[in-house]
Length: 315
Image (cartoon, rainbow, N blue to C red; front, top):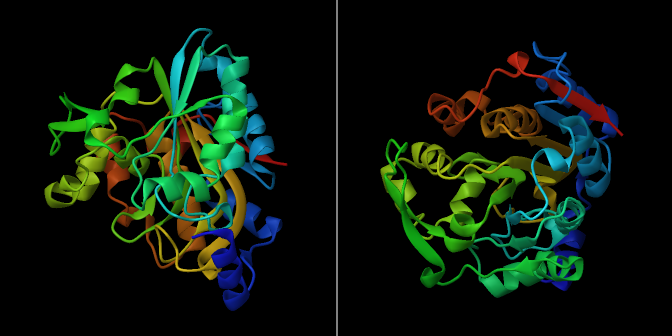
């Protein structure tokens, strides 16, 4: 969808659904504890930030987590994996916000990363997704490398030794070859998985992902997360497709939530973001999002937010 189509949709549907920042803080406070049992630790295990622009929220989150240098070292060859799956402009929130990706690239450059690649295996036409999401232009302007993922030759089959249902998969070579990678999903509704966030975003590193649906979607999502785990998960919840996801039908599906969650623990960040999301779309029950407990069972992280050091920040 190009910008002209978006403006037509906006005119027909009305403005984005906007929730007052005080209301979103109430949602955050009711779903994400400000501290856990490990509150005395120097660095947070999870940061939840509200009421800022993407770059400012990222900076605040990384400050709480101990800085990007905790995760990225000088000379690292890294991959940043956003959600770029849909032919949608940033205003429609089908993809990760390009402003967040630019801010993260700059952080990694300042940390001394030797190489930064960005990609996603899109669902819609890849050229339109890369273009209309605003991510390709933003990545190139920031001095990183956009990698393509639309051909099977870009993938190699790897074993998933810890997988329960998924024993192997064709994974993008950029993930296989990098030193480290950072997972940057957008929080939104999903018709099959109910919510797409950090765990679900792993489907974009796989070529043969259609097999997930026949093998048990939630378990396969958890299984693929055991392969070469990302060092950091940053959840873009600046705008959220609350209904009719993962694409959304119009601007009326989008809520301006102005939030961001970040953690090296993929299960914890999905739990925090998931509980937040189910207060925005109350027709979805968090306990029905099955891949989070599946991930916990595989040792990927914890759903018990009270057991970790969580910092909640309002800008």
